[in-house]
Image: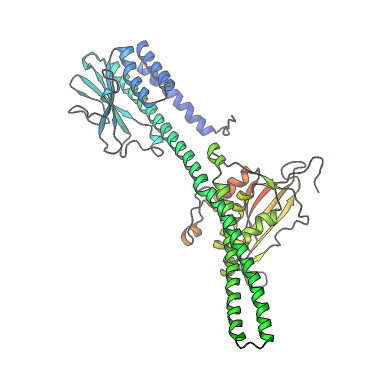
Length: 470
């Protein structure tokens, strides 16, 4: 397993050291007895040893019983009703689970006495409330009852207040862990369902499309026979030739429309299948990260052009001219092994942004222009000596981003001030682009250039052994 560590951060280090010193002072002030210290250590050790919540509940009430001869009862707040429920006690273990508390027992942010019992609040970890809401309006997730009260010293009372805090923090993490396990199980089941109910049936559309294509070819053949018979009938001065020719014209038009619709459906199917199969890949969910399926490809023909074809009409409707001369690569045989499905989605996002945000500008001759340009260029030794990179550019005319916006443009959820007010979106697209490129070992970037903005990504070129830079 690879362990990733952040770079040392002096302010964070100061905070950690301050908390360590504060804990040292606290424990010196608590001055717990040897028995109390052993009780805490036993609780921590056993809470880690036993994984299930049921065993954790047993540990919480029986450790003080065994080590200190105090009985106890654990109450937790019901998520739906926000009322206390008994969970376990040292007399009946889990036999009381789900029962109503005795009269007078209540949720409180401060310790209180009731009969021969002492009640202390159980607090959750505030940092986890945003992830896993235990209670809606307070950090109190339960109460801990200790009895007999008459045997409790002031130091015992302090001890059980701290003990209840340890229960809360450990319980909160265990609940979060259980929720994560349930989520993982759900995701694994969902992935299996996706493969069975989405990916596999989707493949059948290829078969249906082949049948339609076959029928269109059959119609073309029939049209050829009809045309031949019409010419023969015309040479024989058949009186119904004109009517038959009108039928032929309408039939040709219908077949032409059918072929056009077929081509559109086929392109849409191929693109949707590519995206579905690359995004909903089982390995992504199993490993919790994007898993690449690399293969060598003709990048222009297999990646760029299919995505450009998808957006060509949409760009034209917005009056955006397309220019493919932004950075030229004379040799098309640049060795790139990429995950075609994922890289295609990089271009889908960049072209989609071009459609949304490209704006008209004035060129140096005073002409109003509005265009998108794309291209690529080799960057010798970009990734180190003998490790060339290739830069892929997508440029659009329009005002530059501010330096502040440019610094955050690839962050999850970030949207420019202008985009947020004028265009729908989530701020996820460029962050997704960044993740895909980085998992390919590349880099993403933005640069303001004359007349507009250039978004780019740089991928390493895979050279064959013994092959140098060109």
